Length: 272
Image 1 (tube, one colour):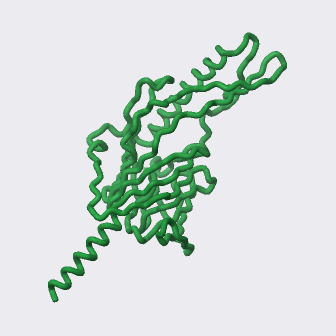
Image 2 (cartoon, rainbow, N blue to C red; image 1 turned 45 degrees about the horizontal axis):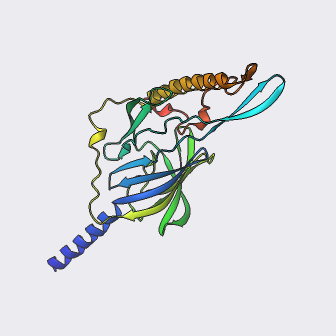
Image 3 (cartoon, one colour; image 1 turned 90 degrees about the vertical axis):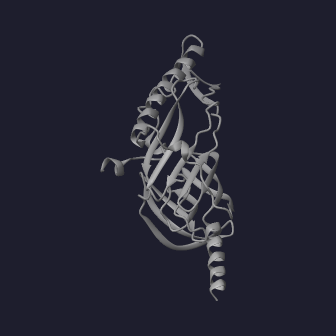
């Protein structure tokens, strides 16, 4: 009888372990741009990565000599940016660390290395009674607010880990789908692979680093965008015929509108 019970316990433990280890491939939409993303996870940790894209062509409207015309200029920004380590979430330690190679000049020849440290498990989720099937997994609907956006997500208790794409976490099952209320940012699980063996995630590169906060990262980004905006306008102006003046971005009060950021505010950090 003891041998039989041990066999049952061992079989259950292996099966449960399998449900807590795996890889999810997501399609990620960010302000209309389609990207490929991947989440590697185990029972308490995950690493979320997004495949780098090339920057698209920029359309510029210019005016001059009482005539209006349009030109196209191709600005190849950051096409050779290295692959970063991604975003590490550790539920046990209540910690998120994101690694980024950050361009420090217009040509993106040189990069700064940023490690942005944040807190996990800060989203207060409302569980809803709606369910649906995603990739053969039974999923439940939930809604929560995070950094100025309201997210509707679908999570599955079939994979009992408190993780999900990007910084979305804290539900009793893995998040397979998420959409903000403005449909600017969306995550859709395309493929889920569960693994029998224990999923050991390589986290060594994330630790013993110099960390900054998400607020400081935002400040660095805005400074870089201001530099790029000035250099782009200078490049456009120098290519115009004499007497033609570019009006692009010169009347805008902000380089990037707040509602285009993934995180709109950091009130949860400021209140600490």
